[in-house]
Each structure stands twice: as structure tokens, then as C-alpha cells.
Image (cartoon, rainbow, N blue to C red; front, top):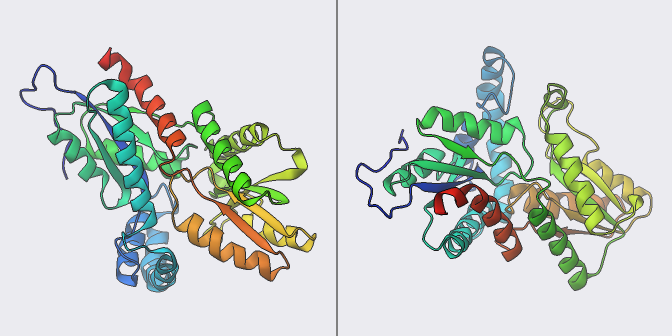
Length: 336
């Protein structure tokens, strides 16, 4: 696999530091074959499924990869665009906008490459791209604001295997004021354009409870983000809820579950619910299909009227400015 290598004879004014923008990943196509490849890589990661290999391998290859790819492919097909996977399209847009913003702030171009933990472009692809640009030091900016071993922990483990060069990791930014301001602005703008629902659900991707019990700080980070966002929106305690989505398998995952909460709200007579997903920097399957389509249908079936999904930050200018500020704080000593 490509290693990050410094340029042999860098020009005196060359930039020795670059940025690796990391996201989780996406399949190459909305087909069972592509999903089988993607899920085999994703679900083989012990940071994601921490069962003993000898116990999990026959389940994964004998059952999961025989049944889940077709179902997942159908879900992806509902949101796939002419330009490809929404997560990849939005991640590329974030990367392009961030590169422009960094160049404007630094006064010269800052090498930046997008790498996915699973799928393509891979982390190895990104490291190779940065190495060819003469980068000797990498700032890793994950598009996971809240730290979890299943996301950033896995990404860092992969980078350790792939690179012999130092990396400067932005571990999390769940409480960073620029990020929170961008989130609040996105909700305010949505409400100004569409009106405000009776309840706001702040939904994050779940993790198994046993990961939290072992010390993973993810739940605490999600709670702090939700609380800070609610404060910025000046919401009373009964106007919003923290919920968790996307559980997989039979394990007990973080609660309350988003879909169950939506059904309970419908049963209580709530007709209109807004959902924002601060843990997803870029819109993807979990926001566009799971929340905006599937959970909206569940809410209506339970007696609700309308679920309105508030889009992820994607390449909104405020989001890009916040990400640039995080990078510049690490980049400033090099460019001073």
C-alpha cells in the first residue's frame, strides 16, 4: 500500500504539511456486488464489530454477506445520484471548498486529500496523493465531530498501519464554537424557510452500549453537542430530544432509539417533527434514506403528519469556515 513519503529535495518554499480529510466511506455503486465488497471490509473491522474473529467470521460470510448486500443496495438506490454516492459527492465538495478556504487563509495552497476508511478513495490513496505533493507532516481532519473508537479510532489504527510519518490528529470538535454556530444557523435557516415543527430530534448514529461501558466517550460527546445546540436555539427541555439511530444486530445499542421515539411522539399526538443529525458532516445513506425516507414513513404510519429532515452541514460556508479554523490552529506554526 502507498506510504506517506516526504519529497526527496523539496523546494525552499514548498509546503511540508498537508491535510487528510477523512470520512467513513461508501460503496462504489448501489448494487449487491458493490455492497458485498464494501460490507466485507466494513464489517471485518474489529473496531466496528468487536466479536471474536472465529465466532464472527462464519456469521459474516455465511449469513450477513449473503443477505444484507441486496437490502442495502436497494436502500442506496433510493438516494443514488447521477454524480454517484451522496456521501462521496458531498465529501468531495467539502474538500474542494476547504482547500480554497485554507489557501485564502494561509496565503498559499495547502495540500489536501480526501480519504475514506472503507471504500474509495481509500486512506492509502489519500496518503499517496499527499506524499506526491511533498508532504512530510499530515493533519488529519475527520468528518466525525464526536469521537468514537468505531470511527476515528478505526481510522487512526488504519493510518498507523499505512504511514511511517507523523500525523497530527484533530480528535474531535463536538463542542467547537464554529461547528455549533454552523449547526444552529442551519436549523434557524430551515425554520425560517419552512416553519418550525413541534419537536426537534437531535439524532446521532448509535453504537453498542458495551462500547460506552468500556470507556468510549461517544455518548458523552453527542450529549454535549445536543445540549449546546439546544442552548443556541433557545429551546426548552420539552422541545427537543437526543436520540440514536442505525442500530445493527442483536446487541443493546445506545437509547433512546430514533425510530421508536418518532412512533411514541406520533402516539402522543405530535404531528410535525424536525430531525437534525449533527454527527454526519455530509449527507449520506443514514440521513437521506434512513431518516428522510424510511423513518418519515414510520412516523406517518404511526399517526404523525410530517417528518422534516434538516440537511447536514455539507459544504455550507459556515461549516467550511469552522473546519478551516480547526486546521489553521494546527497549521499556523508552520505558516508563521
